[in-house]
Image (cartoon, rainbow, N blue to C red; front, side, top):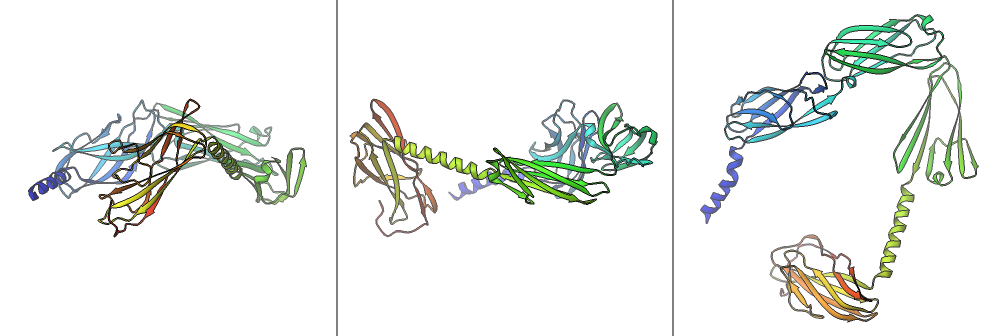
Length: 462
């Protein structure tokens, strides 16, 4: 017998001994793939072989070309620095971060180890951001910039800037996460007829045979100007944040008005509180009057919480459903479970079903399901079951009829010598199938629970 056990343990342990066992650590990465450029993403990996000496190859199952293409030998307990290169795939339409699963395969036994690299796949225009400082009517120059937002090294980048204020063409290199600034000399005659506002800054970017267009904004400001932003977020709990910033050089007198219905106002709070509240019909108007100094920002936060009325509606609907179900049910079954002390280490429970007939019904079949690993103790104090099927794990009682108001009490004991239950024990629902007015109907009991700690009894087990 001991030899058989040892042999079984050896069979279980042997695959873990001979299987591939590599510890892969990423040291550095240029993880960006730009659609249309055949420039790969490069990952520097540190691989330690915690298994046996072998040669290892790299591959994936989703069509990306990978390097190295040749197997890499790594001795046992040896660490190798391996550069894994991922080339872009033309037919992939996914954009954003892509978790590329790849495999390292041992040459000796063809066992595989699954690893993951995160590759960011973007369009050329998504790699850049352009912008400019504000233009004042008295400005003689303007600073603009182009920012490489990605970990990607652009060589021989051609950029053509254009706007209502100027045009500029430049060629340069732009390293990973780098920004390049330009100072433009302005001719006031070019924009003397333009009104204050926001104007588009265009940039046409070319590298190799790939071209993209991106946009930025130039703000042409006047001396007295206030910037207002409104942010909305949330659904059930919605928040509206109104910000007004005085970017000018004069005192700005502001009036903000927000409308709410007579229902939504009950669940709305404000920070700060409004200066004036007026009601017209079913609409309530909230007004704030402030003076905003230069450089200051005034905020109004409006928070509407629909959670409480939603919970109230759900509660009312649930009560209506339960009441309706209780009223329309012809047979009500209440299930109760009690612990039975038994010696010998057996775990036993007494299950009691109270069957209450609210109307005259016929051909009543009460079915209760037995929990797994539990047996029925075949001694019954009350109504004896009609059938017990341990194979189907059900116990049944049959009644030809039940009169209105009639109550039957059904009980049985289940036990198990194999399982000790500690914690919360749940029993299935019992089901009553019956006939009323020529129609077959069904009702179910509650789900019974028993919470216990493992105990040793001193009463004779079933």
